Image (tube, rainbow, N blue to C red; front, top):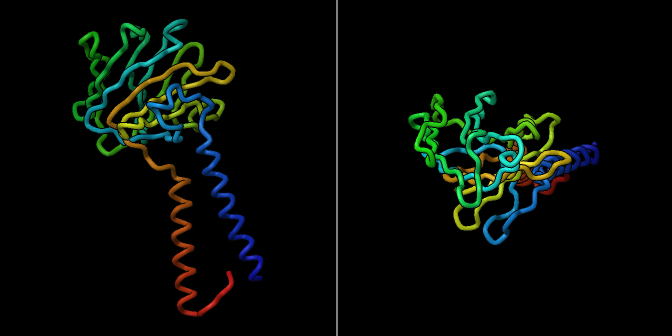
Length: 219
């Protein structure tokens, strides 16, 4: 019985570790500049600051079919708010820039000096990002929202500024379709990571308590 309990415990931990490692595997997008960006950290949702500054670094959809990049609130995945629309074509000499104000609920097109989108502020809520085009369909940073379910986004944190991320999107059979830069965001820890961490703490606590009370024990 004791050996069986120990075996079950080890298997549960192994499964939890495998789940987290699988989640961290991320998309297959290559880091475009390892001297500037760290490796893909697998972030799906972010906590935004009051203001987010966004740049469109590269967009394959602009060259072919037009595309959109934007965000959604974690508690309401259907709330797709556009940051850059099909009318915004990013080029090397004319990069697109936008400012998102989470206090007033406005996305400001910095280049054209117009309001791109408006939304209802949802203080304290997390956000994810999406990329949409006729070629790739709509891709989300949250893997479970993609059809079919797969990790379509890579999130590369800046090596010099921890609240700046390069977000890349890819489509099966096509490859990388966009790179977007967002600032003033912090990653939301993945539930699997928190679960594993919490389970580890509980196990250590229980083990320590039993050892203090009963002396040497075998799990």
